[in-house]
Image (cartoon, rainbow, N blue to C red; front, top):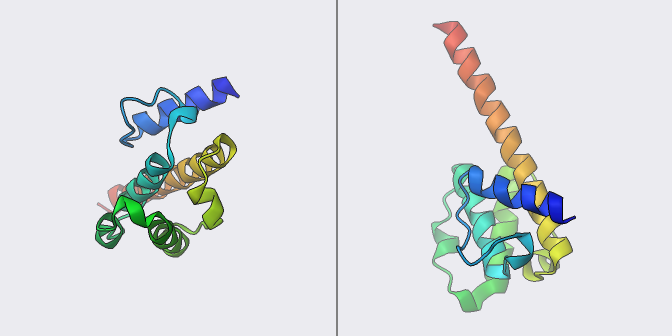
Length: 121
């Protein structure tokens, strides 16, 4: 698992996710980090996340609920709230893998649109 976690963590950084400098692997990510990565993904999908970002750190349940709602609506994926609230390594790994797969689909769709646009010129 360490090898796949290393690849996943490197992929997060390479695709533009901001992760704390103190985190060296998936196992080092906190609940706040995971919620932040979810918000960053929503930003990449063009979702207005200002109402989520306004919530304080002491409102994690409310934040997780809003993030889950927006992920369901705009990304087509839904998590158990407990998964978003619980930082055990298996939950973190599951969330990050699914988010990365959704991001790769967005990238693939964007490349297809770019190709379609270029062929219409």
